[in-house]
Amino acid sequence: MLKNQNIRGYLVGLLASLILLGCSSSPNKTLTATDLALNEVKFSATEYLAQAKQLKANNLKLRAQLLAAHAFLDKNQSEQAITLLAQISSQLTTNSEIQAEYRYLQSLIAYQKQQYQQALDILSYPDAWQLPRWQWRNYYQQRALLFGLVQQPIKKLQSYTSLAMYVDANEASKLNQHIWQTLSQLKQEQLASLKQQPLPKIFSGWIQLAYIAKFYGADPMQLISNLSRWQHAHSQHPAAVKLPDDLQKAINTKPYQPQKIAVLLPLTGNGSSFAEPIKAGIVNRYYKDSIQTSIQFYDTSPNVEQAYQQALTDGAEFIIGPLLPNNVVNLHQLQKSEGVRAPQLFLNQLMKPSEVENTYFFSLSPQQEAVDGALRMQRSGVKTPLVFATDNSTGRNMALAFKNEWFKLTGAEAETHFYADANKMKQTVQQAMGVSDSLSRIAQIKSLLRNKVKADFRSRRDIDAIYMLSGSRDLPLLKPFIDVSFSVFARPVPLYTSSRSRPNLGNSKKNQEYNGIIMSEAPWLMQNTAEHRTINQLWPTWSYNQQRLYTMGNDALALIGQLAQMRAFPGFQFRGESGTLSVEKNGVIRRQLQWGQYKQGVLYPL
Image (tube, rainbow, N blue to C red):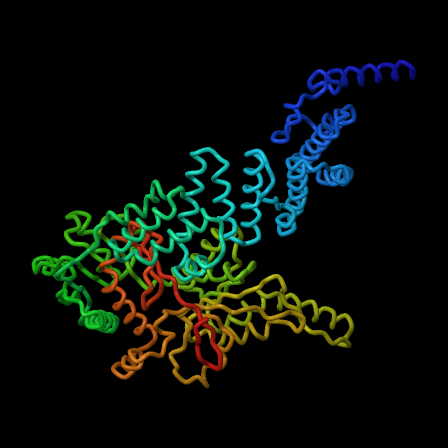
């Protein structure tokens, strides 16, 4: 009986082997030079290794072994690949294609182990190597990926520039468009710094083009002249024959040049305290720039639609305002039914602004400030931020804006905690930072040992920044709770906050508790100029919020002549008093603020 079972098992095994053999390539087949081309893995690692044993020519044998290692990596069998590459390391020839593939596979192993910087260090080819196009393509593609993973975006773009030379025309066009769109988002100062660095010719051309677009964007004639010089100096550049679409559109777009400007504001009633600093800012910019256009103010308090119609009747060619949210909604609805009769810069935002030609929205949006906070932290190398926010509509909207932008930038969720009021603040902070759990464990141990133990609480060590989205009244309470929640074993992390937290106290001695905090703010509010001192003398009771509205009025008037170009070319930025401004496709003015840090009770620019 046992003998029959053995025979039956042998036959079943033999049959299975024959079926598998029939479904795969024969290991006895001698692979051709085409089969051993390094650009494509066609067989299994086992088959390549079997063929390597039969090959006598060292060059072909190495190719089979490299392909086997690649096949192992394709199956995430990195240990087998490591062993195989170690065996052949002493047998490598001077053939550049084999040398390059060996380094590429070593880099892939480090990449699979998430050792990204090591992978980059390994993946370095001498320029003198004569390699097929596919190998240079893989090289630059992998380096671009790795530069992105180690947070070196400029080096990533530089690799894309080289990669574009080794892909088809359609893919090259997509890469060039990505390079341009990314560079056009950089600030003028960043581009000026990059211009001074030794860079490959094509990538240097992209940098110079982006700088020209930024520097001369407000002056179409100067922009055209300098673009012509750039094209002559970079005749072989991919953007020389055909300029990027948005840049070409900006050149062809006519700027607004109104002779009559109407400003719609609530000059009387409840909204007048907000309107006063905006009006002062507009008037200041009018005289400061010696503007020759006539400006007339209209009071929207009685009826915003009447004020709007009167402005049009009086011949307004551009309209600034209105300011109050309900007025913005009502007037926007009117324009939907009657059409836009004059270009308009609303001084507030809609919940869901639609893309309407010649219509723009400018506000001191808290949500935009939170987005700016996410950008700042990501660029500063923060990996795991912790957010504390007030449990109200403003706090929740800012926290959501931060979380969405953080996920967009990093692919990670930002942890957020809300506190209802000052009484709940301490509890919220201790729970979020792991202090409550630590104290509970200590209490349990003391209970078991009858209070014969001394212990310090421990706090979380996985966070590397805290973003405090609170008002100026809450922050003096919130920061101390955070400070004392770091255990003696943990290193305190940077504390960030928004301009909403800035105290309206000019006395630096009373602001000492703010020391170390990093805060976003309108650039003008971090200066100490003669204009700033004059405003403080004229309106000594103005809060920081009112001073920010003053900067908004300044920028609203200054933007008029540049809005059309800014919308056509989203990369163009205007350095205003309220921040660095750009225009999105839907006409919303996006604002990036300046960052400062409190030292000795004073907010200094970083």
